[in-house]
Length: 310
Image (cartoon, rainbow, N blue to C red):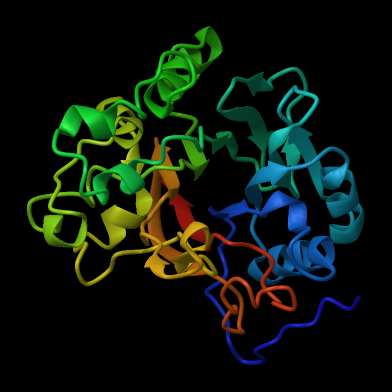
């Protein structure tokens, strides 16, 4: 399958020698839901042309296939598990013996060919007890009912972030973040506390929610790239869920699926973001159940961002 751009003339500014482009990409069960899904995943990575990609919903052997399709010098590291689920792809150098793995994702130290060093995480937090479902359920009348799914011991999204931040090696990375930036990217399976505010509660079931995963990162000095560049939630919601899930199939597509921003790029350290894009290719994806021939292979929008090193 040829990797040809679908929108000739459409382009995004290219990073400079002192810059980096990062992408987070939930690949929807490794592309199995659209025709030629893995080839389309590789194609869209090449179109965006990132330095590093955080992948989610990765099946066994898929990163091997993708690196072969992407070609030299692309390499990968996966979460240490029978079903990897999260992985990192890069066209730079993964420093040996620096990989970190948790229930929520995989981290690595990467040396760019321009000489810069970064610490990078790909996360896929727990998908169960999805908060916006509870928030939009008219039987829910207390905030603690919504939060119950976020803070399930060990497996909840809040505890998963806490686990990452408290890894001994991650603490060392944090201590060195004035010199080596840290990036945490991925599908959080939950919204941002910056988006569910008094200003926006009318579009979120009339709730203001301090979603713990994003709040915990903020309290540890990490910045939400999208909301830094686009602080107005109403004019720039940045929705990443979903490209194709517009109505919930469990009710025969009669009940709207909550649309929200659940895929993130966080950073801490000596970089400045100057562009961030939610991405679904050049052809509008057809919603479920008309999705099989979509050119874009995911049910999430990907997100990519450009940063300059200071």
